[in-house]
Each structure stands twice: as structure tokens, then as C-alpha cells.
Image 1 (cartoon, rainbow, N blue to C red):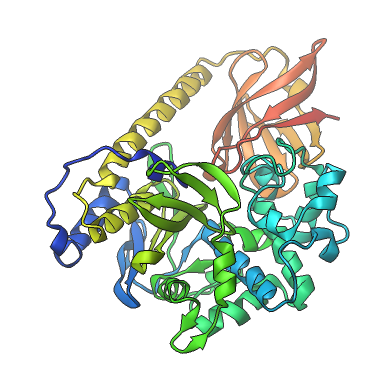
Image 2: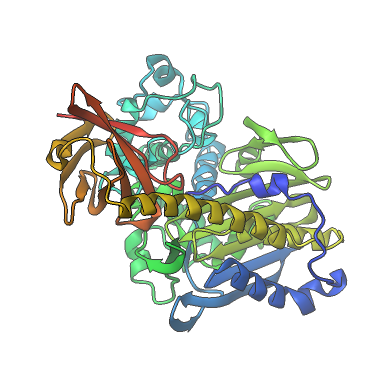
Length: 504
């Protein structure tokens, strides 16, 4: 699902870096294992799983490092990792297959299948098509509403209902904005057409025919798997294991867990026109339509256009067309890269959610096949990543230092307590905490809370119990010495858009 580390690395890493002297002719046989192992250490990634497919053959299918920090269990080619938004290509391909079978058209209105579907703008509701859902152009800002939906107790139907309360940042079809709830909606359309839930149809039409027997579509399937990786994130400068995100409600957007063995089968089929041996598992027409540009996203490294297809990012690199995507959920990030004219596919899965290795190792591998001079995209990105992390840590330390001074809030602590509501999210309750703090609880995240510590005035330093939701500053809205609301912000990993909650 998240996080589209997406394309920044592809766009920005153009400087040459002479970090190692690697013989390109022996990169895959002599140097690749060492390079990946070194990169895992540098990026503080416990484990990874990588597969490379070239000309219909598996060049590499291997696990690296460990499944869980502090546990001596090595990751292998069958270890499951959550793949986040790389799930979207499965959803888009399945819907494109239904179109190839003439069971629907991607230009059908969403309301044809979901009559109760509504967006805030009635015109957008009436015009929105399945294609609009799959290419992220319904007017939402990237990740908008994900705080409400992500890892929440809402059902898929409740997520779709709440989309009508999202105040779209952009006019309909005017700008690309990455929208996970749109893929949830697409999954429900699939159920209406096939009379099977998304997970059943994906398994029947894609996973089973491709032989992806280990891949898990739902949280319960991952939980009972014997060979799975733990999720990890950074918290206060430390790498820690965290619980899996519970994403069954958003599974069509980012709920799949897979391994190098299975992802190699997926990539090989996509590169071989949808065939497995002599069997046509995926219609060629379905693959083609997912790779047609729908929305412009910016420029690529070649000075051409970067575009979004249906579940894929499309761009140029060194004169070659690249079809790729990244994905991230709590504790995991991954990437899938296809270079069709080279018949090359690369899958990288890692068990931390804070690394750009997924978007740099693939470039190093593509460069090797193109016989480009070695420049270690990973090392170049790592320096920028470390600097960014350092700046974030300094800003957070300044806020924590302010808390230590024990500044007095502008009002009595009890004045900030009570129930707050947001039209989209629902209810948040703030109650007295321990040692001069407040505690916030959230209606749709019953297992999560946030601790609020005074920063002086009407501002509070906030630490979420789920580290993926991050740390923030909540400014309260005060009128005539009375608290009337509060601005709530979670980590950008979850959502960029702030929320205003009003006090009852």
C-alpha cells in the first residue's frame, strides 16, 4: 500500500558514485550477494527476499538476512513479506481480465455496480468509472483519508461509505492523487460482478493458476503461516519489531503477503504475455490495458514523462520502458520492476518500512544488464536518507527538550479533555493521563492511543502508541478561553492531510 518511496529515487539519482569497483560481467555471480548483504547492514534492514527473472529463467531467487531482529531464523526464498501496494497490480489485472472476458468495461460507471457509491461532489459520483478508481484520479490528495481507514476496525463497505465525507483536495480528474480507498471500492465491484469476494476471486483466477501457493491474501493466512518475516520500524533511533498491520479491510489496495518463489511466477507470467508454459493464464489484452498511461506524474530520468497506468508506474530509463511499483505497510517495503524489452523482472521485499534499498538495488541490477558504469544508487540514496533522518531526530529532540522543561498549558488540563468529532473520522476522546499528561483514544483504532504532553500555550507534543503513526504536535483551537477543537496530524507514512476535530 504505502509508501510510494515511489519514484523519488528513480527521478533523482543521476550522479555517479564510485563506491565499489565491480566487474559488471561478474556482478551476478561474484558480487551481488556481497552487495546485498552489505546494503542490508547499511540500511539497517534485518532481512530481504530478492528474485530476478531474465529471458524466462530465474537468475536469482533468494532470501537474505533474518526474519526477525534478535531471532536466529534466516529469511529464504519462501519467507512471506507483506508487499503493500504491489497488491494493486493484482487487483487491476483481475479487473482488466474481467473486461477482456466482456463481463464489465473499465469505463463503466462505478454506480452501475455499487448504486450507493458516493463522493462529496455529485458530478464526480455520477462520472466516476472503474478506470478512474484504478488510476487514482477521483480528486483525493495522495493518501487522503488513510488515517481513518488504515489498520482500523472499519469494514470495506464502511470505508466506501465514508468516501462520501472526504473533502477532495483537487477537482475530479484534474490531478493524480494516490487513493487506497479507490482500490477498496474496485475490489467490491469485483465481488458484485463475480459473486465472489476479492480474496476468493484473486486466488481462483491468478494465484492458483500461477502456482502462487504460499501467497497470503488475508491477515489470518499470514498469521498461521510457518515461514513469515516479522515487521520492523524505527522508533527513537532504534530498530524494533512491531505487530502486523491488519489490512483485510483494505486488502485490494495493499493486503497481500508473498515470497520470492511466488513473486517470480507472477513476474514471469507478466513478462511472457500472461502465459505459464503453453497455458494463457492472464489475457494479453488485460496486461496491455494495465500498462497504458492514464495520468501524468512528472518527468523520468530520460527527460520523458512518468505516468500511472492501472496498478503500475510507467517511465523511461536509459532508453528503455520500465513498468514498476513500490509498496509499504507497517514494517515492510517492497518493489516490483519490469523492463519488458529486456525481458527482465526484479522483485525486492524487505522487513523494515524505512529504507530506500527497494528503489535503488533494482536500479543497480538494471544498470548491470545495460552494462552501465557502476555507481551504487544505494550508497547515494543512503547518504540522503541518513541526513533526512538526522533532521527529523533533531526536530523531535527539540520538542522533547521543551517537554522536559514542564511548560504550563494556557488552560487547566481538564479544559482540554472531552469528546471530539470529525465528520470523516468519527470520535476521539481525550482524558487525563499520568504525570501531567493527556491521553487520546480513537473510535476506529481501539488498540491505539496517543499521549499528549504540554509544550506551552495550547500546543501538545503527541506520541502514538503505534510507532508507525509517528509523533506530532497537536495545536488546540481556543476561543474566548474555551477549547473548541484540535488539529490532529499523523505521520506522513499514513496520511499527509491533517484533520480538524471539534469538541462536543
